[in-house]
Length: 481
Image 1 (cartoon, helix red, strand yellow):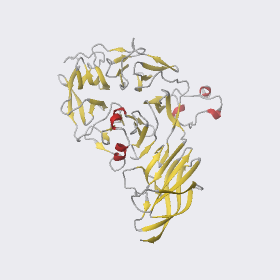
Image 2 (cartoon, one colour):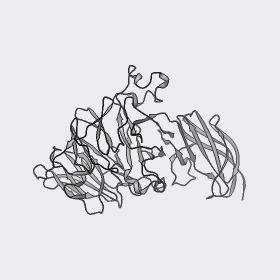
Image 3 (cartoon, one colour):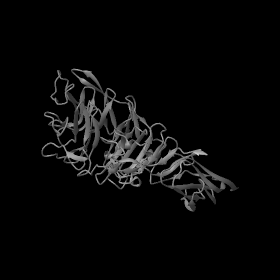
Image 4 (cartoon, one colour):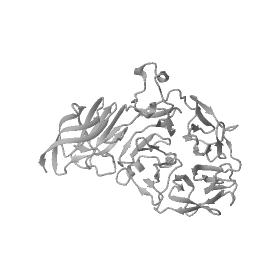
């Protein structure tokens, strides 16, 4: 049988094991599995308004804060309630502005480009006196770095760092090493940034700058990375894989390790993504790395939407792709308070009513991390539930010079679904539309059929949790042209 190699709509469609399309199907350790359903953690209510940025941050004593910002407020999840931790009067924000969140020692800093950078060690946030407004903030070494700033003047290409080991001091000084500058060798504003080891990375939409701490008086020395037009489309359109950045550019997906960015979607789905995403709303893209599964989730807007309603999933180890579309506002790695026999009633009064989540999932563990999203009702939900439905369309099997009699399709499962159906499709000439043929339920892992055509493919639909690893089409030649 042929191993399934994942979603690759740009590849040669006769490649063995290729999926030309898929629905709610993501890479597994071996093969592909149904995408998870969303489960609301017990005792976590919805936010008062749309989440425009969220994060789980850790203090030096490893205690955690779960935060989410809306347009006008900052909320912290405490004892099962979203507590408003905004400064007095709240925030101006904007419908399109999103919060950038970082932790520096025991202090949490948040920025939305409209309001002065906010700071809190516990309780309510407040302006940092003398700090700029910033699009992006992140911690690197002894500093907090701010990008795309307004320090009284608009500097969309500007950077500013706080004093060494003091995130409350932003007054420029050679002594304290608070400094600022501009990155002007390429056009456009700074769109994203983050730490890469002890280096700082600043992205524009079509360029990358690597910052190295060099001490006073320069403090930070910035070098443009080679690699042509590689850049990041938005402040959340990247994630750290652990020493390597994954990011979404204007025309590709990239990895960057501090040397030269590497494109990773050529020949698999680069062209498909450009045709199936909204170019005017790509700045809203959110990338999140689920470390427990080594999967990167890329939430993006479809062509007819300005909101996040679609998702691609990339397996860092196998380099395979999948799809698991859903509508979200923000994404975080939620840290569960855990569950015991005494607290199961928080989820359901009966065993049958418990969420469809395996008991070996991080969802049930105290301190367990699980990829989570805020849905369009502002409700936090973890992506830990069993798959409800999924499916795929195979690549093509055929011969331009011969008619093939398709006799059967067999799938191999690591986890068999509750039920599976097959829809055969055929075409007499390459490049012409496929027509639906016989269809029906799979039996004993196979679907028997008799269908004559030069080209064949099939669509499989699954109900319930599934992991499918291999596929095979049985056929014979009926004759030559």
